[in-house]
Length: 219
Image (cartoon, rainbow, N blue to C red; front, side, top):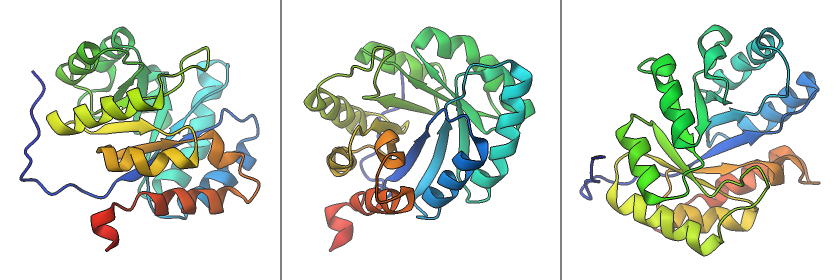
């Protein structure tokens, strides 16, 4: 079984988990990432890769990894566990328990292995027992649908109450960031609404980071 949470441990302040767009222009994406990372509250960047061969994808990751890692953030690939090591990425995020279990041997123990697409409590616990470094709740599926926000909050609260392994909660809008942080998620995934904000990526990321402050820490 996954380890239960020790409630004597002081909860760390949540941080952002930035979900980058699968943009074709590497230079523009790099500038956006740097602008977001400058807010100082981003723990990891999830890099969504376009359809291409492994060589092109590896070169793409190599072009972006140092910029992310220089901010002491981890660069996580969305899938593609086979190119993690040679591209200089820090790990991979796998969707679904089967994909996760198939990839763990190529990632552990040196690289981060995260798991999302967990539709049941059983699958989430199985991911933890299989060595997941984190689980993600609330992200859209391939048809761009997700559970109700109330259901996501319930799942995050349950996980935070019971398990030690970190939880990443996916926020589809700026308004979801604070409630998910208060529900107990260690990391809040933010993506499209950050990069599409007309005020700019830096402003949106800083605003999301400010929303992470827990009430007891803000006093």
